[in-house]
Amino acid sequence: MRRFNLGYYIKEGFRSFAAHGFMTFASIAIMASCLIIMGSFTLVVLNLEYNLDALMEDNEFLAYVDEDYTEEEGAALQSQIESIDNVAECQYITREEALANYVSGLEDASLYEDIPASALRSRFSVRVTDIEQLEETIEEVRSVEGIVKISASVDVANGLVTVRNVTIIIALALVVILVVVSFFIISNSIKLATSAREEEISIMKMVGATNAFVCWPFVVEGVLLGGISAVVAAVAEWGIYRLIRSAINVYTHVQLVSIIPFRTLAFPMCATFLGIGLFVGVVGSLITIHKYLKV
Image (cartoon, rainbow, N blue to C red):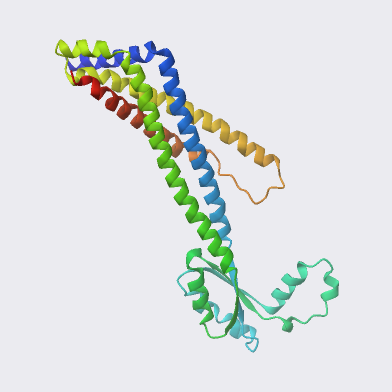
């Protein structure tokens, strides 16, 4: 009996799906559009956060050694700096290396050939693990005996952290809003399709049909609407993402922007689309059909 009922539910779900051509198309179009909008914004946020994280990973500061220290004494401070918790990497730069780095960035290096290396201080290039703890790490490095000066862009680091945190909050808020909007739009679309069968449902209830017997075909229809909408949205999102990535790659002078390869985002995006599509389709169908069961 269960096999027969299951087959009936599926057959009726497909029949209802095919019978309401315009409403079916409208529901799929609306849901797919909402998923594309939500997915596009999420992908933009992910790429923005990816680029911000890359900038923060490159963030480092310089710790200058006391000029009275010899090169050996200065290099000996490296182990103390590396022992600080938030220090990811620490590189010692001698006076000669510092001078060479400085001169290499000038247009006419010959003008600076007579500058002695002793005019500069040896230093450490320090990269941190967590940029949010940059100020605390700077203070700990400053407290190391032999370190006399710190050169760091703390305001830039704090700005990047603020941008990242605000972006995450806005992204979460908009995703929630779009999910809610999608839910109500699809619910209303299904309500219009269901109202056309109100008389049929009432007759079924009056002759003794159970609520489950009436509901399951609509659940199947909701699964179809949600699943197809998710597939349409995923394919459209893939096409849009490829076009945008290709357009950015054409402009080779845009070196500061890195685009995440779509293959790394495809599975989570498709799984999310499918989950949201099925949830909205099924729950929207159940909520809509509920009022017609009170006969």
